Image 1 (cartoon, rainbow, N blue to C red):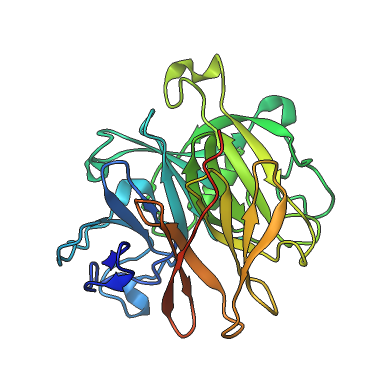
Image 2 (cartoon, rainbow, N blue to C red):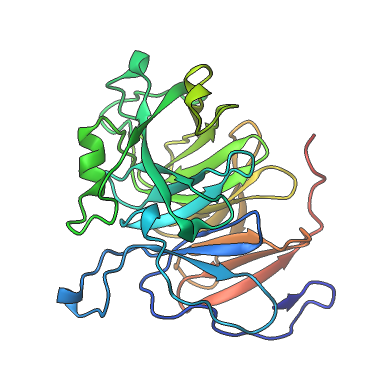
Length: 319
């Protein structure tokens, strides 16, 4: 609990236990946090329970620990991050694998994810079918290009064989090149793919939901996926990983590349600029997020496991 007025730490405490390899996660509109397991361990490998699920954590200043109850209907896979569209209640999820999918969860009760729901995966629209958004062998999606969205229904989402992405691909779902950090902005859902693009140096996508997202009417005006940024140059963006939307409406992206590690600023036009450098060591930045009042940027350095609080002044919000 960080006091943004005094710039001091008031207290710290454990909020979740019993989980494995928790990764980016994401905030909910009702004031909790979804913590995501980036692992699919089985009891046969020495764990007490199967892993590879999301967990909801109360984001509160008073010390308390969440009950580690897996949100099973949201799927079992190598979770990275989530973002929720408050208008539709849809929950979007990334999967950190080189053939991972982009998932959409339609909750039965939009404020109670534990009540269950339906899980779907993104598929390229019929007119663009066959497009590989990873663009590894050649540039298949241009920066700024939009691709209409279709969503395929998934079954057996607890996936005891860790094959959810493979079964989704068999239904035509599009593979992404290691889906990473994800955050909702005013103009869509932004997410990074660490090894996307011909040079495998990273992509940033924006998904714009349909005005009728998650309803039968969405076929009248489908949502669309846009390749927002792909510098394809390690000097500009070296494997973008976790990201957040800044209070002024642009992106702060953590790198997970080789050599020196940077936080990158991505402006409203998809242009990428250096924001900060890890002068401590060569470990990656992770978990960038702003305080609710917008005054402080928190970001972690994975090794040795420290959190930095970075204060402004920050730019004025874009309009």
